[in-house]
Length: 305
Ligand SMILES: [Zn+2]
Ligand SMILES: [Zn+2]
Image 1 (cartoon, rainbow, N blue to C red):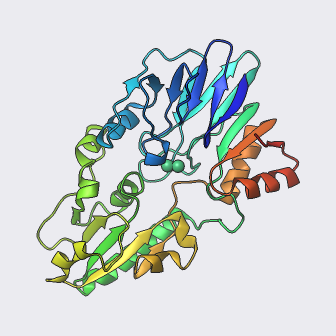
Image 2 (cartoon, protein in one colour):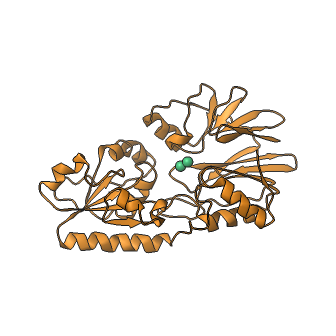
Image 3 (cartoon, rainbow, N blue to C red):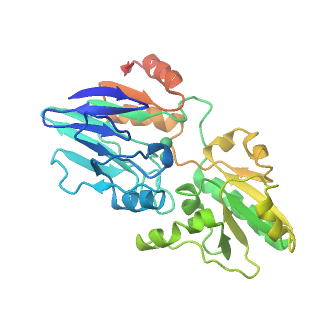
């Protein structure tokens, strides 16, 4: 098989077909869509392989795909551990194989199963956090810290605003705090009906004196919060892998920040590459230059395209 760079992503030429990964190219026979984050969605009239969850969530975001159901037998999808419905792609052809991770995490958390890395000849791996400074604390410890923050606020009758990326990250956070009464920002609410169809029941939309407000990452001075400030004090927290940088939460004027990531950190990226035993490693997204340099120091064949 042949691996060709295509915009920020790749296309794969096999004997029988050309498939493009998270991007559209004129010569692709069909596409693969790893998940429903907007930087991975694109317009196409061709058939596309994706999970049912990605298909439904992309629809809410304005993309109506032609879902491919008769997937070639040498292609398999595996959970990528990034968000609901996210998939990695595995192709096997004769003695050669390829794993495209898409955005991924090897950690199982909340309702998400982490990527189980498969051995392959060719690995295409994202490197959002491809620098050694990105080594994240244990998720359970961060969730415990967030719980303490919430409980402390409740004692003082503050409404706690929990902020993060509205699709993916937010449902994970909602899962951790599902026992608290809560309300949802409309940008999060709009996914609820579809998510409920897939068995995710998160927000309980309690209008009367809720403990929590789930919200996209906004500045704490945003006028959206004025209606709540009239009756109660507010405390703000952000959730992101980028929170490893102490300045991150200050960007939003948040009181607290918790380092919870849906991507692999630097250590996990390295261990994924090693576990895959890939002879050829293709790196894309984020700190790809830096990560390739580290791979080469480890004696791994990181390829420039
Ligand atoms: Zn993503
Ligand atoms: Zn992404």
